[in-house]
Image (cartoon, rainbow, N blue to C red; front, side, top):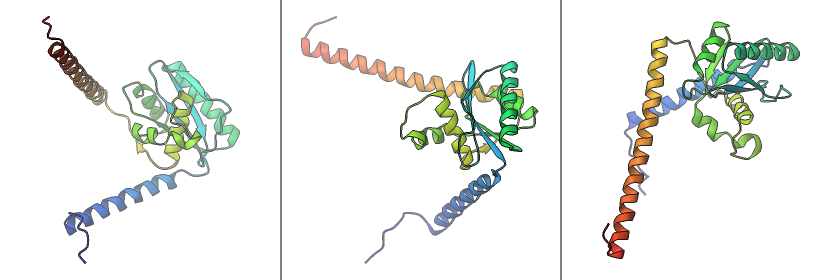
Length: 211
């Protein structure tokens, strides 16, 4: 009996297995980096105010209530004091702060944190969305929950390191993000126009009227 063919050449299969092993190994290293001495912070980003939640390396919530802080220097300093209080209270020497790189609202906070010599990591929004049901078996969205999900994702190694970027590079990322947004909206508008033209055409054809 002939076996099922995967459609892949032997070299391609080896390369795919190697890449999968490499990715798994890298994720294990990221998980091992987070120790029992770590305070894990997840931040849900917004235009005017961010929301933060704190857990330990196992995902146990350490903050009695989430922190909402303004997207400016005063807000950042308030966040810094909140983090320091949690570290002292729970005797945690290390900290890792995760956020989603959506839009451009995260740039100022991420760069400020790096300037304070704090570890900042980025979480893919798709990964966050897929893990929303882990906490309460519900895909519902709210800022405190999203911040907590981001912290969970970080503790399981699904993040990438962030290093401060030049202003020009940051502007380029914003331009690319804006372009993707407007291209997607343009396609939706085109489809809507075509749909309405089809509806009008069908109506005129069925009624025999002329506009």
